[in-house]
Length: 585
Ligand code: ASP
Image (tube, rainbow, N blue to C red):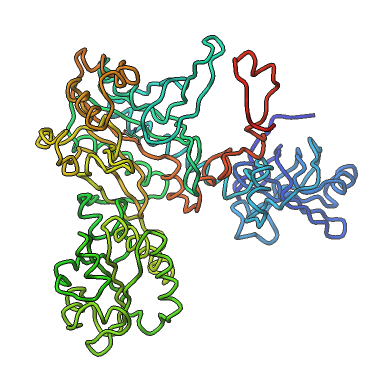
């Protein structure tokens, strides 16, 4: 019979010696040492040793023979001092001598061991997620997630933010991904979209006078998944009225500080800022990892006179040349490694990699051919004897991407990234638009981001590429963990921006008429930001994948292996939705 427990397993210390207790939990370990059974009992708070020996009644000694790992047990007994304390266990000063033992539940054979790290494949872990979630790592991660979210809620509430829920069944928000659609039964042929973010609702809450909004919001994006993406994920979403970019960034910093301080005891210090152009020039990416060097050096001017075809061709086509130095790597970088790095950058569209070693003030390898005077190139790069230099030439996006990713790849390969460090930075002044494949312009953030006031006149001209936006991204260890912007709060400006990206008045009215209407009814200047909560927690936990910080994640092919979703549904269910499927079932 279930009795109320007196203690949880993880609390026991020397001060409990002499207490009569009732504990419940899972049998993490059962060892039978010639009639003396040692049982490690576990619940969410930790583990405690239970001993069943000659001090226990005969019936209990018999029952102990029938228990196995992961059985659910109730133990009554008294706490005694351990003859030999176990320093590795938090409760290791004591143990419980059982006077009563009841099996509350047994288990089928376990598909994998759950007492520590497991080498079970991820598919098995996801199928038996309830067992995987019992493992200490995941228990730790979900606990940390709770602590982080609580800290965020508290800090935002203290700063006057109201938590408001926004709809899940809604219409498309243009965050750049495909929507998940939900058919309407009541309105045949019509669909809701699941929100890619609460963007439009939070802006409308500002028009409605709510001043400071936040939400721990679930967002849905139907895109091909990578390690750090899930079809549904969580954002810390916020919006503020009557604010400048600096004011939103200050609130965002308070959130990051609260999360890092509460869960890791880390003071993240002042967060440096750099412009998007600076980030691309020095790191090749818009989310730079500042934990290590190897920053890129612009060489386009230095090598302007080069006749070496890869350089001369790139420059004649309006491309760029830049490079970086791997200090002291000459001795242990073989031809094979250079070949692998060359293949690596080709995946990002670079034609090749001009590598070389600095030796006696001269260069070896293809880099030697870049300039007749190797010394000039070595000086421009800031390289010294024994260093490796890596140079790329070609169109700017490919060179930035190739060398940017290579910088991180080399740092990982050569173990140059310090463990346990968090390097934050803000990236600001993003271009408002980027060229799309069809030659049109598409917004780099979303089309509700405000252009800088001084660039407004460039809208719709041939200088669209020069317009900067009032957007900002927060980066930690090379991952974008948050991003947002000051919004357009005037209907006429919003209509001009939509028009400039090829959304004419009719389409704008059809898709975002409700937002344009709202903006025409007294909209305050406003701005906001969203943190990717899963990514923040993964960084805080040191997890490789956000799947390790989400209780019930999906696979990279967007399936839930535990529930087997998505699944076919009876055709009668489709009929009421007025839907016929063409897929083979
Ligand atoms: N809605 C944006 C996003 O989901 C964030 C923002 O601008 O607040 O990325």
